[in-house]
Image 1: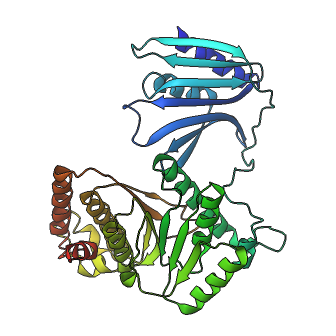
Image 2 (image 1 turned 90 degrees about the vertical axis):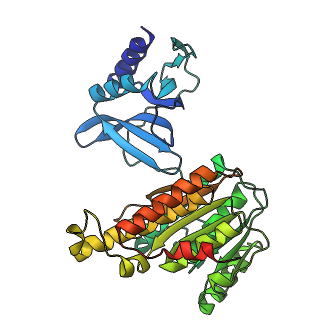
Amino acid sequence: MPLQQFLSVFQSAFLEGRLLKCTLSKNTSAAPADLKNIYLRPVSLKKGLFVAFNFRYATRDEVKNLPIEAAVEQLAQMMGQWFLHADLLTTERDYHLKYTKSGEAVFSSQKAAHAAAVETSHDREKHRLLDPSAPWLHTLGITGAKGEVLANTGDKWRQVNKYLEIIDSLLRANPLPRDPHIADMGSGKGYLTFALYDFLVQQGYTPRITGIELRPKLVSFCNKAAEQAGFSGLQFMSTDIADYQPDRLDMLIALHACDTATDLALAAGIRNKAKIIVAAPCCHKQIRRDMHAQNELTPVLRHGILEERQAEIVTDGIRALLLEAEGYKTSVFEFVSTEHTAKNVMITAVGSKRRDDRGRKTALEKVDALKKGFGIREHFLEKLLEQPV
């Protein structure tokens, strides 16, 4: 059996120290939503040698470390069900398992294409989309004069890199024009705004990015830093989100815009037909003030901390539904681990050119049901979208 041959080779290569990596690709409709592929490699942990499964979703990665027996069992369940292709690279030969349209499995091998040593370090250096020696990182206080990440900015550095991974994934699936017009609503000191501009230029884009920030001192600081960095397409404006009227908007970013400022930004993205919207909400006050649950959760929500968390979930859940009603495909997921920041939920939305009246009706019905169940009069984003342009 081809599958058994492949599993046998995988197990022996792992046990004999010859396994370099294995890639599962060509996913099927049975695979979990947004799961693109899985990368496997040996990893050395305190408890011994394991197989690291890196699940690559559209907007995030998840890693699971399994002992070899469980790894082989997992592979047996996935191949032919979730994925139709598997490429196994060892120090001696490369092996391939492919399933045809008729469901027939084909196993083959060839001489190793690349000679390499097996890497099992758990803490090996991760590929970064951002060069830490970039001068603007030093200007913004993230790195030292020699390009080293400062001890007190490690969390910010990880956040910036995770953000770029998400952007990279979104753009691979949904390319923007080569001269994209982008607005960053509530840009603050500009860490992520500068990172996005630098990344896009490195990818061959000629972006025009505008950072919207109310505080004049931060705007002045960021404009000077952009000039020093030679980022001619990056500018910052001291204005209210509601007053910003772009001539064109391909992508809208709103990271940690407080409370209803997130809704103002989302409404701006929707009205200007931004193809991609990326938001990381915080300070969910509007719904919590208004929320009076009238469902089975009422006894639980008498506890303040649980009511607060539920209000955040309802707020962002309705935001996602309203985006879907406007023709966007949305995802809500953890941005970075809570050990790095408590503001760790991200909403991404990708616009569709086709109007889906049935989908809009269904999404709005779900919004109405949530409002009724939690005793909410209105969601601020809903109110904004009802206003005439």
